[in-house]
Length: 203
Image (cartoon, rainbow, N blue to C red; front, side, top):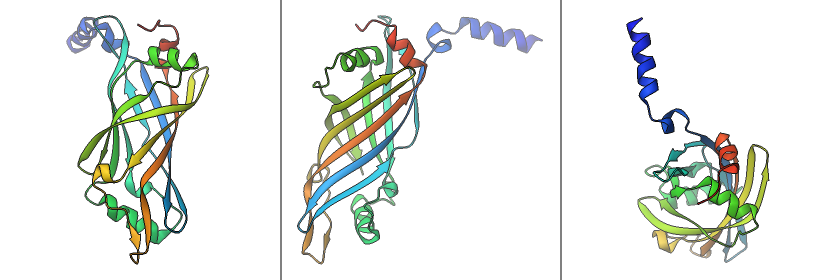
């Protein structure tokens, strides 16, 4: 009985932000496109399912801090076993098994208001980590659709292998992959944070 009432007191004393924190869960598919000296190469993979929790700022905004998306390197596939093996070696997959994208602070209400009004021109910045190197990246939203309880969007950004000190793989020293890639990320988001954001004016 003492433990029961002690737990009740702790819950009552917890800040409202911890008790009523909203969540945002998501999945994504990653597609990449790159030229080579022989032909165009396409590949795809998927991020690990994620769940983010909102926090209330001093100003009363519900934000998500340090949101991270992880993509397993060995989950990337170009539909060619030999090419995949070279790609995993380039990423040093055994030592660095994940590619990570980290967002500084996301304001779901502001983002939904921006995208819902058709303003997809403003870039979405994040930090991309490949192996031990982190670089700032800006993605553009090329597609956005909101339905009750769910948001689907497509983000695209260019990627330079050289920026991450990656040596493009080659075959017999003749067929080489270009330095520049185009990355397309198809994201699906769900959770009560969307309902909260829909009823919260952006600040």
